[in-house]
Image (cartoon, rainbow, N blue to C red; front, side):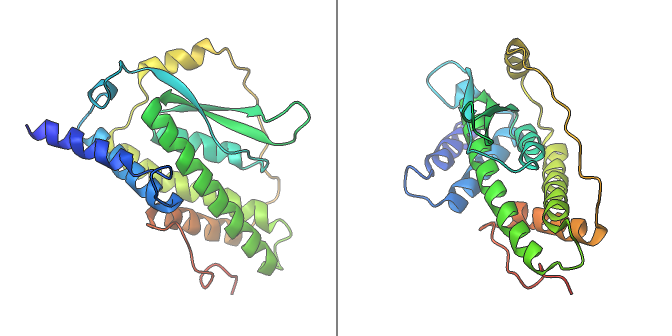
Length: 219
């Protein structure tokens, strides 16, 4: 009976989506809570739906910023997914992330990725306006932002022992995707990276994923 109550609670949390009237920040928090319950109680996908569990591909929002690919990998891992980037169009400079995983996992990952990408980009551009001493302020800040998100989510990964299902790994391997190696920025600024890391951690912890500008600006 206790397990039935847990599964019912997870289902209700999943119903709180943008399509059902929640704003993005609220939907993300409900998705994270559901994900925690799934991991805590080792709930299988088949227990949450009438259909047999099936690996699916869920597309995320378009992304043109180079740091989006690093964020993509971090978010995917936390939601028991794998992910890859594909060109939005043949001539476009934007890329479209694709999350591979069980339907609920991949959809939650896409939602969280989009919000963190928007948050990091907004904060990075705000920081760039005032960081006169760092000529590469946006790049350094967003590099730190991803590191902050990663460190916070890895704590959850470790505590909940989140592991990507074998079916997802097998599906991903079957796609035969080419791997690409991207170079990181050559110049860094430790202060900008540190500020970005703090904002990344805050973005994961915060209910609204909103950050005041007070502590963002350089002294």
